[in-house]
Image (cartoon, rainbow over all chains, first blue to last red; front, side, top):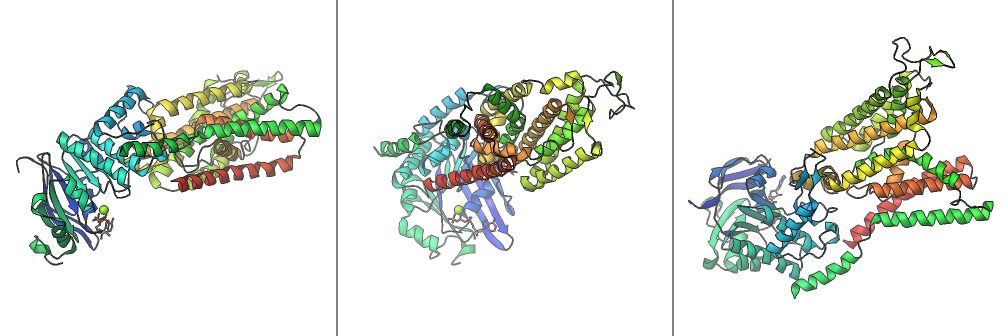
Length: 256
Length: 346
Ligand SMILES: Nc1ncnc2c1ncn2[C@@H]1O[C@H](COP(=O)(O)OP(=O)(O)OP(=O)(O)O)[C@@H](O)[C@H]1O
Ligand SMILES: [Mg+2]
């Protein structure tokens, strides 16, 4: 508890009559990697959107880095040190890699308000270093993102969050649209985050990947957090029975 | 091993990156050569080798080129500006009425708009400031409507197109404004319009490439949600872009009025479409995020070559209008076709 980087209590989100998220109590320790799994529409992305301030929660409390927080928007969360790779990529396709990495936090050479001169060299250098740190190889940094494969774009998005996040990274299905090799590259980045001690929340449908990468697995079902399992104390079949509702640790949500 | 396999396919993909400006340049060269060939066939003399024709051509397109520099930035944000031509008309007539001389042919020029107020023989700075302020106001209104009411740019600037033309007609109730001061006529004298265009074009090419403003202009056109998520104040930025476009249209109005020595409310009709055509021909994509002032400059030269080429070939003015319309449509079709091909490539 003392070391919890993120904690939620009774986190709830209703979209009109849709109860997308109900009373989620969640905790993430410093340096810990946790996966969130669950069926389509289980409320995983909704959970992330409340934490990162993309949406405003219906009720519940959130603590981040020891303080109760009420992020007005994703920018607030980012400034507090929380980076999120969203399910739909937030990249500008027509810009090159450094421009995307530094979008909204550009390095400035001369301050002239909106017409400030960019320090393109510094951003390029920092990009190269950031990519090196995360093990991402992109042959031509100066090409627009649109000329890259889905995997490379995803790597840029992840490198972007990894370069700036000081305290927590959240990834919503980062490998959903990727091929085998590209998935492997993203997984390598996640492993490097683990070794750097940066905590991570990973949303994924890929149980093989989840067991490969994380310490703990949390299962969502129909808006409820139904299981919180140590990787060593569970297996694929066990997880599936929580996902499908055969089992539940949550009394309020038993057999829904 | 796995990494190198990915990178191999990437290198092939990236080898195909081909700047749109090169297409425009190749287009310009081939169109110029076609007209040169036609010139020899039809009139048995050179078209490109005639400096007088090239001079007239570049002077003709320079005024609209100034507008196109602003329109290019608007289109890069994914927007459109239909009001530029009307801003030219309104600016020309209002600014010129602050630039009139007190005498004509040695007699008092009592027809001056502000004769009674005594606002004649004013220094150049007054009409210049009045004109640019007009453009700024029109652009700010365009930008604020688009950014804060979320109405489509097409509708907002269409409204401004009608209103600004209304202002131009109302100002002198349709009367022309003539007899400008000598300093005012210098704005449009000789090759000055071309120099003004060049200055504006170079300035904004540099701004688009090297400043925060440029980076954010492309980012907003490319993915407004990503821009917003990254902390860019998209609304404020759009207002700035439309304000700049308005001021550049006003500058074009000042130059046009100065060049013609007389301002009329009907000046600049259809200039907005010519400017959009120059940008699109030069590879500025109507979906936003892509293009450059260099591209628009090449588009402007293509546009000018086609128009003066047809004039040189003595094609009837009516046909020229029809051909111009076809060029604009063809440029947009080419843009749509490019986007489709791009989407299929993934
Ligand atoms: N903006 C919204 N308005 C109304 N309902 C919504 C909205 N966003 C999500 N929902 C609903 O909330 C529920 C949870 O959605 P959520 O996106 O969190 O699912 P998920 O677990 O991320 O699923 P997936 O694995 O498909 O990404 C779904 O029933 C969805 O239809
Ligand atoms: Mg989801």
